[in-house]
Image (cartoon, rainbow, N blue to C red; front, top):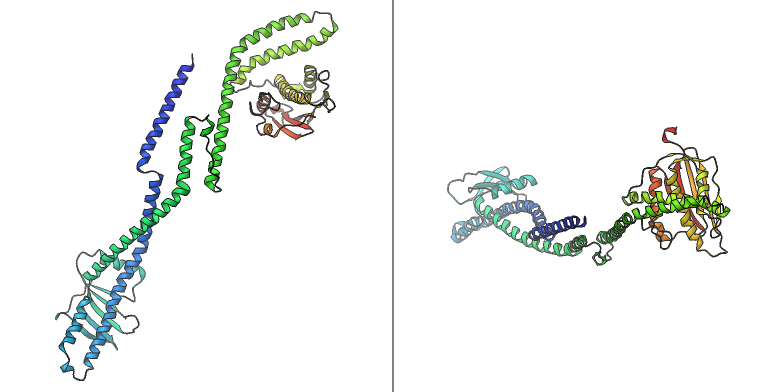
Length: 501
């Protein structure tokens, strides 16, 4: 009756997950990881080009101004040749016109030459001197000032007339030139346009190469893992949904291997959870009837104590004790099915008394020829729940007996239990002469349904033992394991916590 609402809830959750996945995919189409990578690559390359452009445009401006000074020196040489002619008054007027045209060609209004502290006017296009709105010395301007002046020219709204001073390359002569800034600004704008176009082309080409390289190396494998995780969450029980690593040796390959291991562990966990759920359902159905049957058997077993037969009198107490424990375990089965053991009812108990009862209960000496070796001192006490610790020792002993029963008759079969106390804690060891535990059982030794030490076992015995010892504040572990046998050790408090100094 309770399955329908659970199924409806599960279907609702699954549909909401599908809707969220589909919405995420729709939202991701406009700007997915590949698109972000492409946009960011273009942006970063363009940003790097800007860092290159800023000093380069300043250098372009300085080179343009220096070129005007170089041309001024050329004009000066042409004038010297004209003045040194034998008949300067007969010089061709066309030569003077050519000099004037050369001056006009590089946007200079006035040229001057400084020599011996004197300023000599070389040429002047206009009859009236021009008003100079700025002065730039190409040889005494630092990098930051050059950048500032370059952007000042680019951002200038109105045409200006500027004075440029300096020496041309390869000359120690000082020249002055009054230059129109508007042609310089236009040349800088053309240079900026060309640089930006070239930068964009370089950015696109670089981004494309980086995009395809990173997409193949990183984006596609990551997308493959993301798609696999989405498919796996839809039906995690299918083996074919587990990712198959591509065998790469880098971090992507390691991530794929870890994802595969995690998915396999999750599938195992889900399988175990189903088995636990099935076990709890089955136990809840048979628990009531089984308790009634055991109660009836208990009534009949009480009559055995009245039978005068010595053999019956010998086995009757063991039978009655076994039935009593079976009824108690049956009552506590549902407690374990809820993944929680009953809280221990602790008190000081004699460990030797428990091991003696365990020996009689297991009937080892008369069963399968196994030698029982009880080395527990009568003085040792532990602070624990008698029935729960008895269950732990019984589970460990039964596992050892089942393993040794399969050994050949001539093989040694010995089960040894001993204990040692240091005052605060008592160490209990159970040692057998069996073939030891297989490697697969050691990996999940104390896990339910995974740590079975014998074929056909469920692995619940060691899981129950681990939980009981853990609730007692102790430890249980496999101390030794070889082909000559296995040794389990249990560390338990010897006294109450309030008694510890």
